[in-house]
Amino acid sequence: MSALPSSPAPVTLADLLARPDVWRGDALARVKAPGLATGYPELDRELPGGGWPRQALSEFLAPPEAGVAGLLAPALAALAGPLLLVAPPWPLHAAGWAAAGLPGQRLLVVEARGQDAAWACETALEEGGFAAVLAWLPDIDARGLRRLQLAAESFSGPACLVRPPARLRESSPAPLRLTVECRPQGLLVQIVKRRGGGLPPPLTLVPRLAVARLQERDRALARPALSPAAPGRPGAPARRPVHA
Image (cartoon, rainbow, N blue to C red; front, top):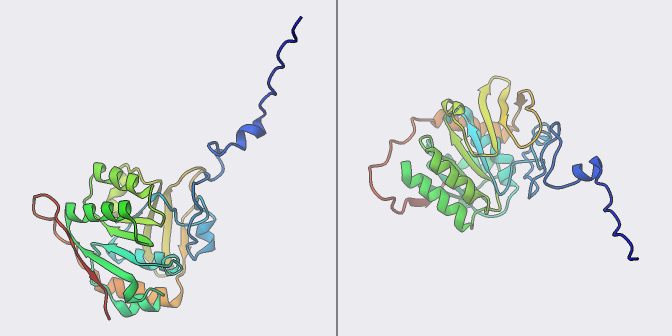
């Protein structure tokens, strides 16, 4: 008589929790790539991967004067390679960026509007060649957001999108969403969406002196966002380096 096949070993709860595609409801999700340290340890502890996500879109809901660029500056300064800025709503102050560790020769600006700006951002994420991409796209629609998230999944660096606070009420495919407000004590940052775990209370982050000066300069230069582009097929947006 042949022996009966042995039964497989039972699967325990510990085995299930050890799987990379499973996480506890009270824990941060595992991510494909380690995050980029933000420069604020208290914020890193609340982000899956321990920093700004790579291979994913991060969405910042903030007015132009909130200083999102300053919030990102410590992390971006630690990267090697060029940084692409798409449709910034104010003229860049090269000296302020340099003081924050981002000299002008590392910055490339795409001067575009509306669909052209979204197209430029998507193309940059798909083709790569940049250490990070930071775009201001106040009027991008749901379809455009989905395209950016798909493109960001193959991008090795941070892909950051700034939109007005009013867009908080709209759904977004971005795995990370934060609101940013400028307060006298510093930047008030609230995580409103992240992978895994509940949402933490708001964090007040105090920037380093050089970053704070960059934020002050950005607020002084803030102006209304560029008007929508004229109808038509997106063309090739202008690119220019930043000079002092």
